[in-house]
Length: 373
Image (cartoon, rainbow, N blue to C red):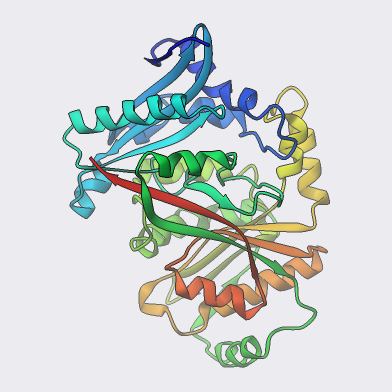
């Protein structure tokens, strides 16, 4: 088969091989969910992705002969390290065939790179922030895939442990069946919150109604996500870019905001699950892939909860319950049958309790690994 050679990605041809390698690795996996390639090209474009301004990166491809057989990205997120007083490198977007020699060559290359840049540990899979796919999936491979979650094959975490990496943190996916009636605890909290005239729930039917609230909601995300592992606060420019990027897929019916004293103090954002449409389009939005993606968004019976948060000083007052009830009401009205709440940190007891209140069950689990250098 030939020796494994690891080369840095330098040319546009190299980058194309890097971006499209996963669809070759997964070509025999009927359940694999490709990325949206239009997003992939922006993600790896240093001119368009402003995360490169505060992160050092390296992209590598592994070859056997002339055939690319694996890839990996190394990241040193200087902003995150400074905020948390850490000296950790990251690896992410790792793919390879079922070949431990290739896996070893790739991870060793990033370990060496991180060590040469003064890092004392390596964690991952973890991208620029928690908004990128994170962790290797370790459980629930029999269930359908969905966007913004890792879609690795089962041998990848096995290879990880053979390299001496240990668990850093696990993330879980809850599947919630829309209940026929509200849980009693919701009824009690909702009746109390409904009498509090300080809180105003904001709901939307059109994107133009929603747009003025996007940046205030992202400001609140910066504040409320500070304790979430891997999160990096967005700059003003990044918030605007994120808003522009997601306006195409946001469905205003499933965006709920809570206002108090003239400020946004709570937000919850869900999107219709368009994953089967992305599979049908093979990740390609053009020339006609977007029709398959948008068509699936209209047909789906499943909702993906993407973001949610409550200002710290307003927690424990039922705002989360108020938004959850409104999401459930909109889901019932839109004939949604299930909700996926995904990538919930195992340490996020508040969110896990909310999922379990409505009989949510864990289907899938991902793991972020760590190793000292």
